[in-house]
Picture 1 (cartoon, rainbow, N blue to C red):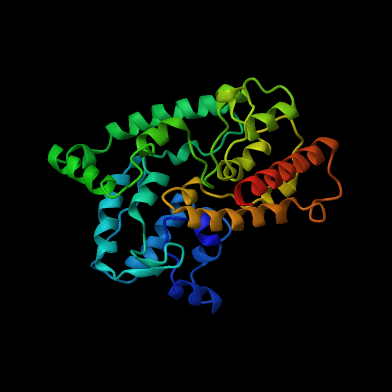
Picture 2 (tube, rainbow, N blue to C red; picture 1 turned 90 degrees about the vertical axis):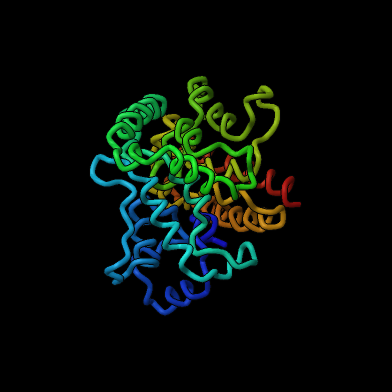
Length: 311
């Protein structure tokens, strides 16, 4: 369940678990239950699972030099995944492929990894620059551009037809909304962050919905995913601290395309990890007043939403 919270595209079967227990797993598997795998880490894991020493197999990289080759990567990965027998997924409690291609495409598709740092520019500027870079990159992708239109349409149907959540944003829409960090962190909505001039306002913009004048809380899963937005450098209203890096970032796709019972169990596990991080006995002793206020506000909000959501 903890692996799913960070990397929901992977079917974490018993074989992978036994490899990790025995200390035989490749290094890329060490943090499956701790962090969202980066694009390179995801590619390396897929390469280990499906290619290995097979000289006849080939898995192109999702980015080759300056060319964004995600579509080519996904087509090759689909061929390899479909050759493998189904595995028991302990979250879904049914047999599934090693890789949920639709969820993987939703998480990484149309994403520009070069806009992963926001230290020297605002979130809004980074997202705009990412979109401009994306347009330039797509013009230099002959392997995709040269595909016959029928093949491109067939591929889009193939990657989206099995998605039961028709209302969910497409990878391109998701890509235009934000530039995801390698860890899966999504930037704060610039329309609200511009209005925040105090720490209290930043916390309110995180915890409450702006559509109703901040009278109602955001859903618990959204709160958990966006907690890192309250930490520097995204939040400039509080001092930096090494302890922020110990937060285990969750991926928003872990809470999509799941049943109510599955979501409830995932939320329980996610809240448990969050409370372990936020517990007063775990917090450093050298926190400033603002840092202490921030951690206490997150703790109180999650406690309240946990009781309202999970009972």
